[in-house]
Length: 327
Image (cartoon, rainbow, N blue to C red):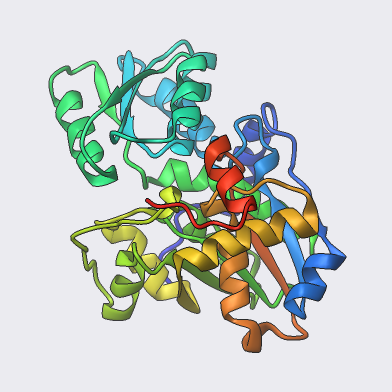
């Protein structure tokens, strides 16, 4: 077990803060989904937050901490494929803090529009998330009043951990939880809360086979970058994982499951058909992981994190029509 990122008292305080803006999201067992996967499957509905994704929680805690500890900061800048940026924009607007978000060219038009609607300045740069991430760091270096917000940070994980805290309070005796993995805040939050509560629940990460730097890093026990992250599952399109996140995943995850592009699209259809919820590509990835692990989960009580529902209409239409979008 790795060194705890936070205490139970800090988690309670974070939950109080987050719940001022985000009501606890539901955890439902959908009979059709359970029947399709031959297991008792509970869905943690993080698509039900005010920005449609779990990331909102982290931004609230990070910005609250920033305002108290570093009041001289007047602007934050970060990189995102969408949900992390919406989280910071939402929290920044409430705290009267300027926000600049860097996204790669060709990023989700709807997510870009949502960030702008929340008051963020959205800058398009580079061909993928890593290029956008490097440009965000460059922008932050130019002004001492600007702070770069990384994709993985203690305060972000602490905020995100409030969803795991809710899940384990809402659903008892979970044998495993499947969660999509991008830069690692979601899976690390789950493992941290599980360990604080002394639970035996397995935590299983799910990545795209075409963006599998986290899986390679987990297997090697250290960060293993990839040259590309060419997947339509934009929320997990990571080429260079965070070193601390990988160390924690290696220490606490049961395994990392790779799924294909067609598997991700089929999982979006499965979630829609069995729950009538819209899942973004990354939001459905845990369902794809459950399907890939069909023999392991049969007859067990498991949960999946529906991490977000922010998908552009053309992508959703293509998927529900039976296609797999190109990245």
